[in-house]
Length: 340
Image 1 (cartoon, rainbow, N blue to C red):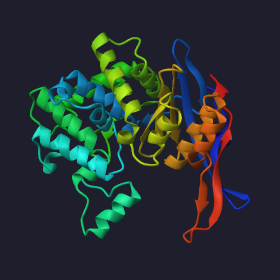
Image 2: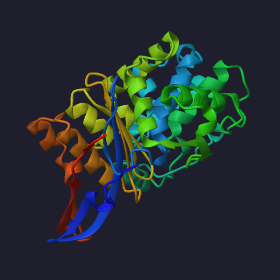
Image 3: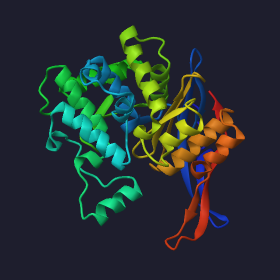
Image 4: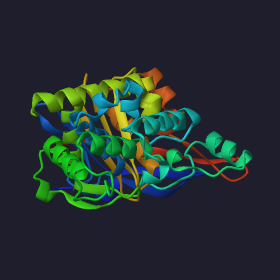
């Protein structure tokens, strides 16, 4: 396998007029009927896909009948795919879904976490309150898993463990969408306690392409995929939140492209209209770098017009500030996509 030197596929962080850091990026761009089209670095890099798995896992929730049984709205379907910011609207929706399921906060295994959203964090502190499990960015996914366990008539106890029927069905769906044998998908534990899957970046991109534009899976699974994609595009706020990359990319492109981040610098983006999907990984785990790289990839694919590029500048070429608020540098992609 031929790979470019690692310095040829980076996002540079400038301090003043000097490059201080280079964030090395790996990426795979796949297209319908043409397979791997473009790459950066190692398109086959085995990567824990982290929260990019959520929209794929949600297919199993719908397939189980849980969404129908709970009469989940399109916003709630987007929410069970989310890594949300813990804003009031997110917490309210989570509370509503939890109440309908008839479960308690202590039955969610994701733990607690300060909200991603700065205003939400400040509001909690001002009120003298601690965050609850519903503020955790993965609470939507866990509520989806609990709903699925109920629909499957299986115990909700230990729903997060790999040998539980919920997790086994989700693993089966991910294997199907990525066209990988289950035994070739490595599994460890994610930040919120559920299984984390490891696969080549190209396979993650293929899974997203099949998810956004089903061609090879059976009709029932395909219907679930389309429903989730449509729900996310309709309600991007519930996938992430205010000023988050996942939400903004959908808003800025009028739903042509959707994105789902994962911890430690993983990102998957896909377009039903363009019939393409992209998986990216920042070697050092930087999400800011992988967002910059993702916008640059779309620019090089001629998928963003000048107005859209301007609206995404905050992510594409973010400014860097010190603790006093003084602008001290910026980040900027420095690579050219290679044809595969």
